[in-house]
Image 1 (spheres, rainbow, N blue to C red):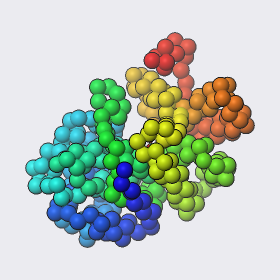
Image 2: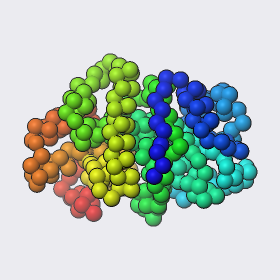
Image 3: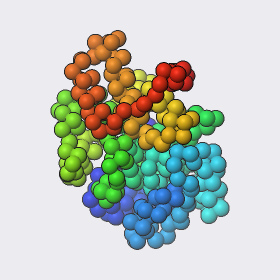
Length: 305
Ligand code: GLY
């Protein structure tokens, strides 16, 4: 897999200029969803490097991470004169970076793309590491390819706009990275001051978290071994997400991952001798910051399926 440049920047315009210069192109496209078009496009639309860009807007939320929206992007690229030498910029959360990455990887057998993640979850996980794809046949991420963005731009401008729920959702993936890395990182994550967010500290923690993910992806880009560690908390988490979906309960991915971490660490303690203290710390932190996911014994079967 080609190496991917990750740029953490206080000045998105400079970072984007730099990233675009690395990708000579004939036409430039920016993909957003209806939410990021409204909230994030205005932040970048005045940049001189985007003056010739054509925008493509698809529906927001995971519900639109599907074949119809993908076809909409392919059609827009094709109808607006996209060629093998065009460049796509994905501006949005994980849904946009996953779907846009897949659209770019398949249009004309593959064009270059840049990710500008606008949620913490996309910054520390979805936009980094080259996993792209869509949901299909009722299954999450059922169709996709491994193909990294040319550059991923992590901007503090977007970090500061996120509400607490979205920050905490992304933070769950950072907890996951903390659990699979080192005690110093884990301690910093547990002690983060949520009452008064220090964005400089958070930005440094994002950088550390992304570096942990990059290290794992470099070792095992196609998830044949150690990269599976990045799925910690996700098997149980996806079961909670599925249950929430069938019941019409709103549930952010990271919250499901946080509860999934508790379940999977419990199994690790019982089956593999994982330290009880780490489980207790996780339970305490997750309960305090994410609350609890409620279900009853009649739903065990749904969760297990
Ligand atoms: N989100 C897990 C991975 O990128 O492997």
